[in-house]
Image 1: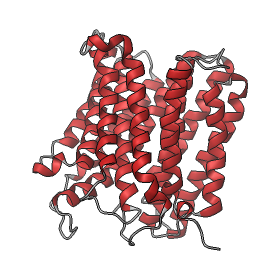
Image 2 (image 1 turned 90 degrees about the horizontal axis):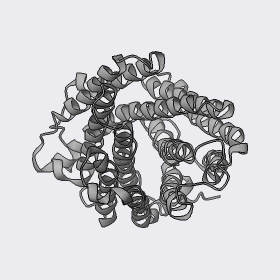
Image 3 (image 1 turned 45 degrees about the horizontal axis):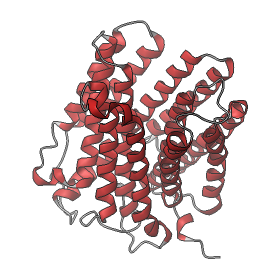
Image 4 (image 1 turned 180 degrees about the vertical axis):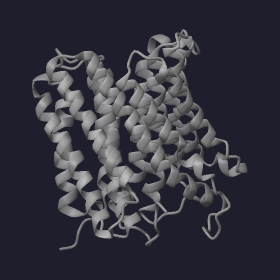
Length: 395
C-alpha cells in the first residue's frame, strides 16, 4: 500500500505537530486561561508553561530533526509509517495533560514523555549500530540526559520540591542549548555555503574547528557547576564564558550580503540570543541589577525559538526537495515574528521598551504563536505532497 507523504519522514509529521502545539499552547494559557490552568494546584502554571515549551513544542521539533537527520548522516533507512505514528501517540497524551495542568496525572504524563524520548534514542542508537559508528554518539548521550531532566522534573513535582523542579527545568533548557549547538555546528556550514554559492559546487565558508564545539563545551561546564554547586559563583563565570563562546562562533560570520538572508540571519540571531542569555545569567548571579528571568527567556524564546524556526524553514524546504534560494513569504514572516517575540518578552526586563511592560507577556506569546501559525500556513502543503526531487538536506 502506498504511504502518504506525511508519513514518509519524521519531520513531515513531527514539525507540523510541534508547530501546532506552539501555536495553540500560548493561546490557551494566556488568552483563554489568563496565565492559569484549570487543574493546576500544587504545580505552578508557570512551571507547566516552561515544561510544555521545552518538552512539548521543542521536544517534538527535536524529534523531527534527529529522527530524520541521523539516518541521513549514517546512510541508513529512515523511520516511516507506523513508527512515526507510535512516537506521535506517545507524545500526545502528555500534551493534553499539560494543557489542562492536571497535577494528578503528572506522573502518567511523565511516563509517556520518557517513552517518547527513549523511542527517539532507540532509533538513533539503531542507526549507529547498523553503521557501526560512534560519530553521532553525542546526540544520543545528550538526548538521554534530556530524558533524565524530564524524570527529574516529574520527581520534583511529585514530592512538591518547587526549587528542584526549577533547577531541573533550567537543566533541560541548557541541555537543549547544547543539542542546538551540536546541530548548528553542522547546519551553519551547509546553510552559509549555500547562501554564498547556491549551486553547492564550492565551500568558501570553513569555520575554525575549535569554534564549532566551544560553545557547547562551555554550556556543559556551566550546567555541571550549576547542578553540583548551586550556591557557588563559579557557575556565574562559566555562564559568562558560555556567552562569550557563542559570540566567538559569530566572529567568522562576516560573509557579506549572504549574512542578511533570512535562513542565515535566523541562525545568527539564535547564536546571539544564546550569547546574551548566558551573559545575563552570569551577570544576575554576580549581583547585577537584572532579573534571572531575562537570561532564561533570552535562551528559551530567543535562542531556541530562532533555532527551531530556522530548522523548520531549512529542513522543511530541503527535505521536501526545495532550494533555499527562493524562500516562501511565510518563511520571512515567521522568522521575523519569532525574533520580535523574543525581543518583546525580554527588552522590558533590560529596562528597554518599558511602555509595553504591562502587556509584554501576552504580546510576546501572541507573536510566538503567530510565528508557528504562519509557518504552518506556508509549509504544511510541502509536508503533504511528495518532494519535487531527491535533494539532500542536512549535509
